[in-house]
Length: 116
Length: 109
Image 1: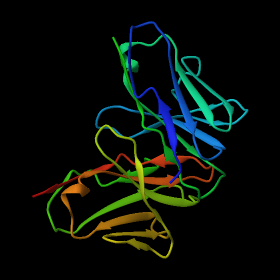
Image 2: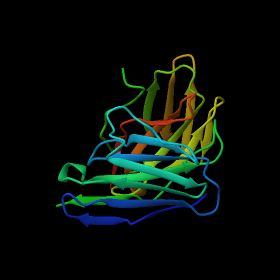
Image 3: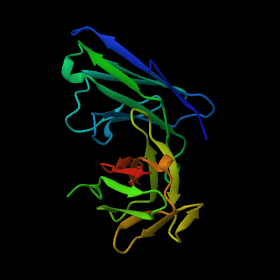
Image 4: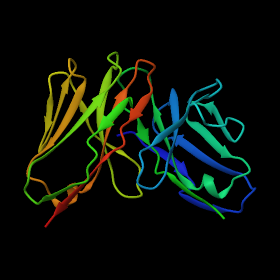
């Protein structure tokens, strides 16, 4: 299957700092990228959907000023957690797909963020 | 009602057993359906797509019932390596993938 690379795989940061997570589609052009958050023993919760060159669409309850998403090219999307707090500690996963409709999504390896 | 609902689990079954998971979805206009597998602390990986006519891949069989708006996954001859969380995923008309809460399966020796 297609490869999506997410970096970093884990990060520990101090409360109040910002953290940037990168998501790259390595062997295909990602029309759409999705960002999810997963708390322990819970399902993936969609945070936002981004299409290349346009603003991300955020899910209800997700603060767009806190979780900045940039999708500047067809192979790269970034999620920046600004002014991180301990409650932002979670597993963040990106996924990417090409086209619309019935195509499957491919996932990055995930980033485990711990804010101390 | 949640958009995608799965069996709550967890399922603990002996090796060699057959186990089935069900998943219901609320949006009748949903276009495509998938089962993903997620191992602990790992990203989800596609297990199989679900086609209208039903499809089989080795020990795994997926079925779709559009009239009743549910999909199912059957695992035959369970292996220890099948232990994971199985996620039902529905592709909405807006091309968003919505995940079920997942069903945890533990296959016991």
